[in-house]
Length: 133
Image (cartoon, rainbow, N blue to C red; front, side, top):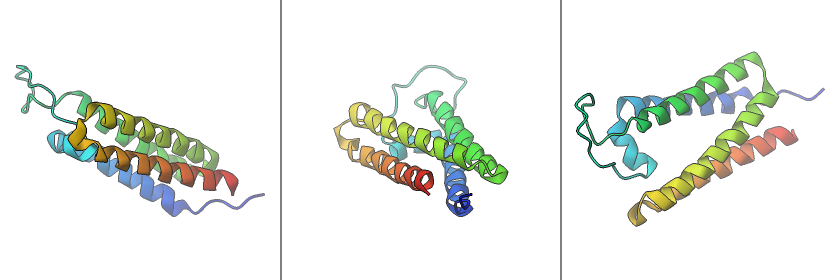
C-alpha cells in the first residue's frame, strides 16, 4: 500500500484555479492582458457592459472554476489517481493555451506564452511526481 500524497498542493492548485476563474468572470477585461490575448473587435451587442469582451472569456472563467472545484472535491474524497489524471489534463490545457497566446496574442504578448508553458511544466512535473510516488 502506497502512502497518500500530501494534500496541500492539490488544495493550493484548486484554490488558485478558483481564483483565476472568479477573476475571469468578475473582471473579464482584465483577464485579456493577464492571459496574453488582445481585446476582440468591439461588437454592437448592448447586452454586455463592455462590448470588447467576448463571452468566451466567461467560458474560460467557468473552465477554471470547474478545474478548481474538481481538484478540491477529488482531494477531499481521497481520489488520488483522479487528481493525478486531472493534473495531466490541466497541464495539457496549459500547453495548448501557450500555443494560442503565441499564435493569436500578437508579437508583443508572446512572452505570456512562456507563463502558460511554465504552468505546463509545473503541473506536468507534479503529475509525474504523484504518479511515480
